[in-house]
Length: 196
Image (cartoon, rainbow, N blue to C red; front, top):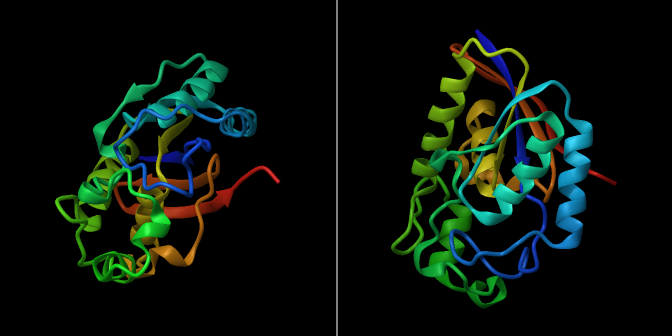
């Protein structure tokens, strides 16, 4: 059994790219983020299941996609953002030069956010969920709305890349990354497809 799974990064919100929102805050989609969600919904086809991270920005993105296909999104903790611990809510520019932050970004396979989550654990929980979906007998495409680091980590996993290399490709707000997942593993179909 296999499943086509589209990993959609949530649309942009007001703090995107400036603040390490993580699991903090309750930021709604910005107008451009809502437009990105609508674009994703228009691009996707034959969606029969929509899952989302618990964060508001992902739930709002998933609601737009779900509405286009008559699907009520299910909230799944395995798709949640990395727990950035003490860094949650910090301005990203203020972290530049912090040796622990620099180590985190260079060594995702071994580093851990202070009082937060290891990247390996975050990726493992997402992969377990995706592989369970891949073993299901569901027909049609599955959408999982999540976060940049989670999607990057999942892609690195299926490409056999070390997590230390996951920042070598982008996953933009509102983008679609597509996989085929089965009991044999997974294969990347498309990476970071987004509106022009």
